[in-house]
Amino acid sequence: MKVEKIRQEDRGKVDAFIVRQWFSMQMAVHGELIDMGTADGWYATDGNEIIGLITYRIVNDEMEILSLDSVHKKRGVGTVLLNETIDKAKDCRCKRIKVITTNDNLNALRFYQKHGFELVKIHRNAVDVARKLKPSIPLIGNDGIPLKHEIELEYSLRTI
Ligand SMILES: CC(C)(COP(=O)(O)OP(=O)(O)OC[C@H]1O[C@@H](n2cnc3c(N)ncnc32)[C@H](O)[C@@H]1OP(=O)(O)O)[C@@H](O)C(=O)NCCC(=O)NCCS
Image (cartoon, rainbow, N blue to C red; front, side):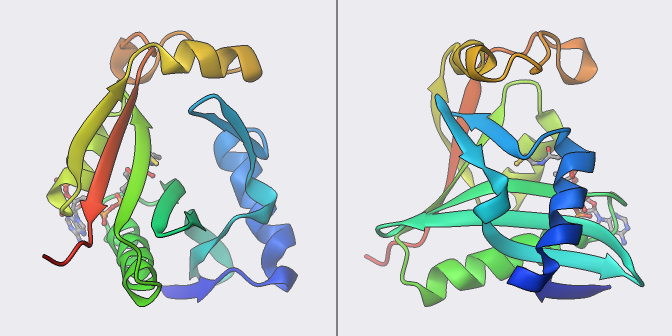
């Protein structure tokens, strides 16, 4: 596996990967439509195939992970990409890394918590709001769970 930072010349293949995973270049989160085509991040490849992608943005001293996708799960791809991002946040002297996932994403909730993230907020019914911006968001999510709420996790980088 090779991990590379997204460069301008990689955008075509990275954007194609995003559309394959998300069926759209736009992500609706906390009432905002985010254009994933401008997001920074890293992608992992196996030969010529992209097997994982993480994207983020930094606003003031806060990093927000916008997306994390792994094609071949449970082989360490997600961890490698997440660690690149944590290192970047430390280099940029961010105070925290925030990530939002949905109430049905038990896999992500386990993954992030095992990597040092803590649950900080539940944005109740936020997916219902996001669905108004992006009607393709399904009503029922993973494992048949009604898809309704956004859950915010954070990785604190504050030094006391
Ligand atoms: C969440 C997600 C990114 C994790 O990616 P991943 O590549 O499977 O992550 P890793 O392989 O690093 O770790 C996942 C698990 O595999 C285990 N694992 C890693 N390498 C392994 C190996 N060689 N053999 C066995 N298990 C392994 C890890 O210990 C970890 O266990 P855990 O789930 O109990 O913590 C992935 O499930 C995904 O793409 N989900 C869909 C999109 C999504 O929900 N994204 C997050 C919301 S932003």
